[in-house]
Image (cartoon, rainbow, N blue to C red; front, side):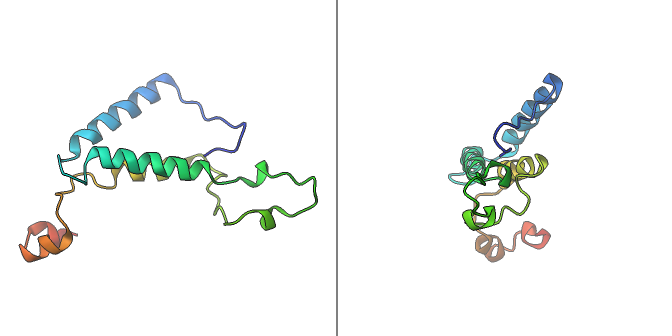
Length: 119
């Protein structure tokens, strides 16, 4: 979700660390029908796609004299100004269901599961 023309490059050892981290995260997901690593992967791809649709003010064409704020449908809330923000959003999508038991909260409450009290 970086503005067009801006790239964020990572050192090979950082890429290797991230790949290892993602593999370890995948192992923390249970084989649930829905709250699985496959689901997290789909959510992550969706978040990345949504982030790519955000128009950065630097990508706007001001040649017609129209203010960028009039052309943008929504505020970007600074998402495009710092590469760590999209990274954090994508990482959050990837980890959002780690260790999910695969049952709704109402089931945990009904069964008086200790996990219920923790969250």
